[in-house]
Amino acid sequence: MDVLCAGSFMIDIVAPHLPAITPPGGLIYAPKGITLNIGGHAANVGVDLAQLGQKGVASAGCVGDDILGRYICETLESRGVEARPQVLKTIPTAKNIALTVEGEDRRFIAELAANTLLRTEYIENLLTEGPRMLFLGTIGGLKYIDANLERLLTAAHTQGTIALVDVIPPTEPNWNHLIKALKAIDILHLNEDEARRVTGINDPLSAARKLRSEGANTIIVTTGQSGLISLRDETEIIMPSFKVEEVDTTGAGDALCAGLIYSLMKTGNPSAPSEDEFINALLEGQAAGAACVSAPGATTAVKAREVKALLKGQGNSILSASLIHRTND
Image (cartoon, rainbow, N blue to C red):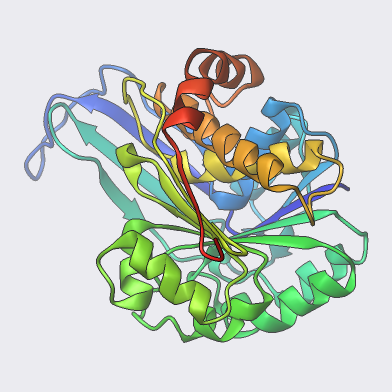
């Protein structure tokens, strides 16, 4: 195992391009069908990494002892990802229903089930197998891991594993689990709304600086179509985004994390990349995120060919337009 992706597993039941939502008692047929997909941060990042070409990827999440849990594992294995599920006998696999009406934003109906109950001890045990990198997603939505986040990250460091932590807004708006663990996080990824919620600061660069002052090592704040802001050591990086036609933004953050990890792993020393290697990893992460939004589905277009095409077509211009400021200059 080279990369361990841990967090949520779920099933997405998707009905796209609906003409309307029917009133009570009504019936409507889905013109583009109804699809059953695997989802959750740990599953998405694992699949993205495998599709980019990363070897030795494992994904861990919590599922029920049911047909949907087995479907998640079988699908991961078919995509080249080793499935390492924690299985619960009495709690079902989580499901999310996504409805998209033409011209309207998506509607979600989700349940909190097995996906929230991933145990700290389960991931600690997997870390003894020595993965070089850990993607830890869904922080804010994992009951036990949230409560023991610093302990889990310390266990990763003991094994020599680099941890990238990705967050979601917690069910109860309390970010103490994250604040307490900041100094133990190697790379922290948030979007600008999450950064604002954690710090109370609207400006994403100022929010990133606040997190840096409180102990975070490397921070990446994604700002949608504007690109990203990253702080690492004494360097601040503002990088514009790739330009693509957005079809579906589902999974863009997961794809960015996968592209970043894949690029860092290629350096041969993901724990201490040079400044140029880190900037290139940010660029490759953004390219993976841009590829993701160019097609429907969280992992459909996150593939090596699509990412390489974006890097070839726009990479140099994005690097030229990036702002790099060293605070010790």
